[in-house]
Image (cartoon, rainbow, N blue to C red):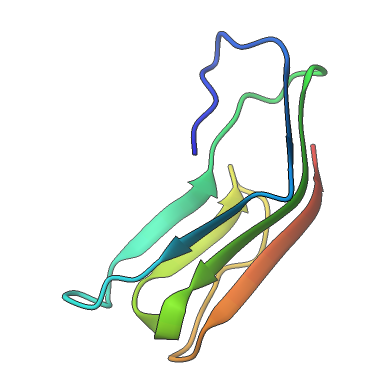
Length: 82
């Protein structure tokens, strides 16, 4: 999910993104969400999930949030951004 750098107002609540790269489970995705850091751009209760450990996320949004890892379904959450 990407919010363009030109956006001044955006607010997201309870959003999630998942990956399932069963053909190549070594794929590592940088993040599930990307947004400019501006006063009018806010997120609440974000989650990314690696289903069955098939692929991974490095972060939840931009460079914030723990990576998903392992061979199980592993979520990573960010309560508020920024």
